[in-house]
Image 1 (cartoon, rainbow over the protein chains, first blue to last red):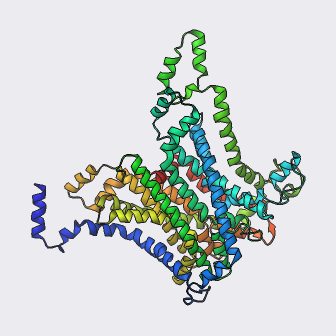
Image 2 (image 1 turned 60 degrees about the vertical axis):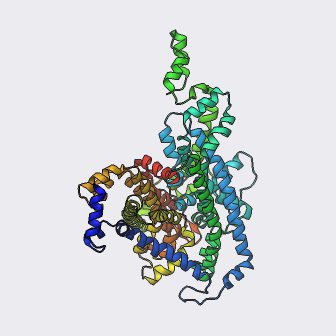
Length: 316
Length: 308
């Protein structure tokens, strides 16, 4: 009955008639997409392309540049500071991500036990993630102060060290310091998202494992971890992505110093483009990050594929 | 489901039975298999340690912000304060532009959040329910857009902002923040919209409602929790945003709190630690308040975005 009515309407009205246009899915979809599309095209897609274009020009602040081919990249290839920043970015990302994952997973598993005030504890644990990064970074800046650091003070009073630690003045210490600050901020995100994943695992699986005589480690190896793999893939992709492109923490605590020892690719590109004025060169550094980001995105995509497979097909 | 099991294991027979039952923690699942001492080592102790480490910087911020300048630099015990003072807060509020920075951040965050949520509602509805040609592709593209970080966009965006004459104006931030927020909000709302039964919509279609009426009168009232979650998460992301605000705004009175605290409260080599800490703490307060009122929405949006 309904199809008959539809068909007759289709025969009677030409495609441009108001009634048919009003019910055309594609046209309605287009109308609904317009606001989001305008934002994403003008302020995301276009700048993305413009950024890649800029990296092939010698644009400076206040002067539009000309196409110079790969000159920026050749220049960067011979620039030891650029390579130092690449090294730092990888060190920062790999160490921070691994520790965040380890501690975050541990915290999630601990929190998955029943305990009093669980909701409040969960809310408090997420606080470092809520507070603006720069503002908590300022607290770390003060904690790492060379003269008045509370860590140095406490350790000297406990008799563990002789002199005050030069947290941010020494390259090695500075790297460790910013990585620790990043871990502090990242653990809550990993822990709370993985906790949400843990809560979806049916308790019956653990009951079955207990009856089979499995101990805690075996339960983790054979039940928890496999069930959690898809969510781990997604969470860690986000974590790696945000750590890799981090800017705020470094800018607030060290500004890339001492001796460029903590410059990440993002902070170096800001340094060269906005502070130094060479937009082209800064854009080239930013463009150099894209291949790594693509790799992370592909990883995430495969993580999602695996999720579909594990749940036995359709999860659109 | 813990109750029946623990009761069947230890029926309350007399004093001993009741005592044994009391000792068991009232938990879920198979928690009753773990003794209290073991629970202390395996659960309470690690949680306490994590809480101490995660909260210590906040304690340190708060403590520093109420210390008089003398106590900040003498070598007395830094873990406590002897003469607490509100001088740093007074200085911050009455002698700097701090109230302006708060107002700027508030205006920018609220405006960008409202814009993004409105655009995301329409986009998510179109992708999930209108099912136009290529809607799956559009959904995928929106997810990809979520993965494009601001760190690689700020240089070209600075150029664009300058060309449009938006440099040093809050409008520059209001228009660029949605690029961070829309992909996230759309993704989240798509999940919510999918959970609303399609039959409701079909009924409305038969009754002669248009798509716009369906969206505003049927879908939106049902998706209010989703809207709240998306809005709250977007608001905290805006408040947290740094690199765009640092690049696009130059005059002190237009800055947002995170940028201003870092750039305006440091005079040359003199760090006013008390005022810096007070500024950091006050600047975190609005998001912390919003968060504390809507914890569940916030957590569900964060975990939902990962799970979808």
